Image 1: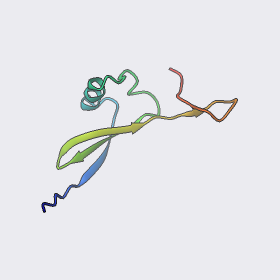
Image 2: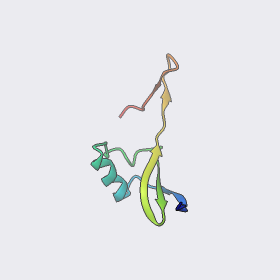
Image 3: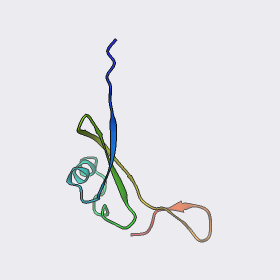
Length: 73
């Protein structure tokens, strides 16, 4: 049996990261709002190689209920 040791490193990155922008574009996801307020992105590396990106942006609660919605653009 071969056991591979991996060390996943998580680094904060900005919405201006070209690799992040290209990965989102390749997945046909929007890239025009990456530098907006409150967005936080991370780069995941394994063995010095970027394996994926992740991130989050704020959600707000509407004033008339508890339904979560995305901020309006």
